[in-house]
View (cartoon, rainbow, N blue to C red):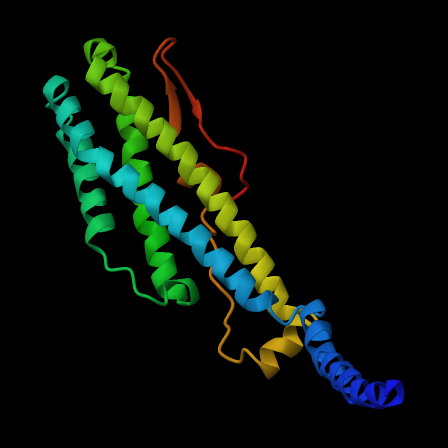
Length: 221
């Protein structure tokens, strides 16, 4: 009877062994980074979503900021109009679904955002000539929110830049190049920010001393 049970158990053990051997290539593939490309791609897309969120947050602050400044510096119409037009371009320009792999669309996005940054920078300089405006609580609140948003933009851009670097490097190096050719032929390098940090980042205005300086976060964009 013992011998019969031994013979009955043997095929079961063989089936288990064969099953483990069949799974071995899958474990080896996973260890060789077969999933790295889609993983890095999703991380880059998530980082891009944060960039969009922060830029949208900034655009949402602009109307109230313009109205507040207008109440104290109505004759600064050129500066205010430049901000209104820059915001309009930012909010009305359609962002295509393929923007991350579309150089022209990505460049247009950068330029539109940089134009709004530049217009806001000029406004912060103009404000220095209006003590009453600088002391207005509503303006101080908006200015603080804008400064915080600029910092969040810098962080979001930094995270996106790093995520894209990792993803693009994976596409160009082994074994990522092999997996792209075999499994992910549609994977394309993503666009990255190229505008200099001193153009992107609005200057930080110190309302206590009336001095200005760069608010750059050192992201090296």
